[in-house]
Amino acid sequence: MVVINMTKTLKKSDTIFELHGQHIVVVGLGKTGQAAVRFFLQHGARVSVSESSPQSSISPEFIAWLRENNIACETDGHTMDLFTSADLIFVSPGIPLTIKPLNEARRLNIPVIGELAVAAHFMRTPVIAVTGTNGKTTVATLLGDIFKAASRKVFVGGNIGTPLFDYISGAQDADIVVAEVSSFQLDTGGSQNSLPFKTAILLNITPDHLERYTSFASYVDSKFTIFAAQGPDDYAILNADDAEIMNRRNLWPACQKFFFGKHLADLAGASIHGSKIHLKNSSSLTLPNNIHGESYDLAVTCLKNPPNLQNAAAAILGARLMGCPQQAIQKGLASFEPLEHRMTLVTEIGGVSYIDDSKATNVGAVYSALEALQQPIILVAGGRDKGGDYSILVEPVRQKVKHILLIGEAKDTMARAFLAFTNVEMLDTLQEAVLRAASLAAPGDAVLLSPACASFDMFSSYAERGDVFRKSVLGLRENPASINKETTVQ
Image (tube, rainbow, N blue to C red; front, side, top):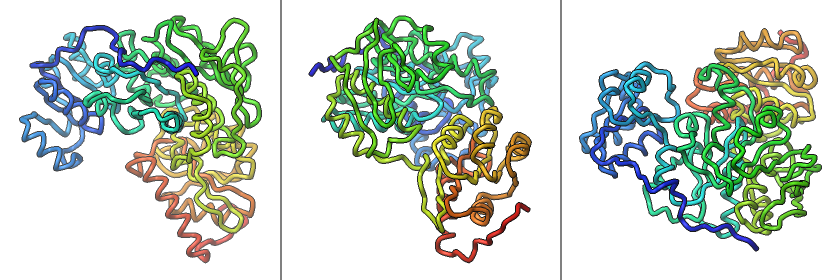
């Protein structure tokens, strides 16, 4: 077995941020922002924080900690004076880069950075990074499980919920870091001076976050910067079935490119055939570690259906390129459990399946969900619009969706997009939508919560939205009399 050298020699250069004594303004106090404050304080910086939300949104314990450490904290908005007084500004992923204080800071040549830019100077462990519009968390979690099955000490973090700061602040004693990376993180650290990922995976690109980006093209540009710091000994893994990715696959020529998908033709990588994944060379490129010809059968795993089949192919290829043995990969695949709110079956009532796909916050994720289901669908959708193109969903809606029940701020816009193709109703709450779906559903149907929108108009997160759906569905099972069966759309 060939194993990649896991010695901790990944610093891009010997130049380390000189943080001691610098005035650093941390913008945004979510998990990453709070971790950044602690990291910069640990390295002797003078730290201030700026949060757009009221102080009541921050935990009292953290407010008390800020006071104990003499850290100035402004809330309810960002002030120009604080930003322009900084030597360095750290921006949390959720902060738009176009706010006026940041524009003014950049005009004054004050550096504006994010977590990946900091990690580029402090990370001493090989990193495999995962990005894409959909599937990032599934693939990052699956990779973590696979490396654990191989008895590798692994840290899984980034956009998945545990900041990379938590790792670079400590002993850095893992064999490998799995980093889930969002476009927002890449925007503040995805340049040639950023973290050089040993392996970088780009799962897919469909329209998302267009309320933040000036165009779909700029969103795509952001995703591709995951490869910007890679060199000739690094690996890029790309989706061969994604036209947007394939059109741009030669933008970063320095790294070695491998692919996954159903249509590899003469490309090297992970080829999907039914529920099996085969690793193959191309006529011009040989897979390292003598892995050509290996096969993985997912027929008896929870990953056997799209889009998880594609996610598994990317994870298998990534883990194998990083030297993980085949047996450990098979063990990790077999033991993997689906993540919550991602095509999760809540229950069946009267022959009707109720499926929680609340994590589907963009049109690409909903498209995958509709493609994965074979039975007639009653779709519950809507929320806060993210600028997506709902016309992408027209064909699967026309073919598979009996009714669409819409909630949230985007329901009028979505109704106009689908009225010509299926029955559409608008409701005020998710609970009402569940009741209405139950009244419309026939045995053999699926009631699918797959919103295509953000949750923040009605819920604190997609997870809360999914929990409300689940609770409402289980309430139907406990009180079947609440289901008022109807045969016509009101």
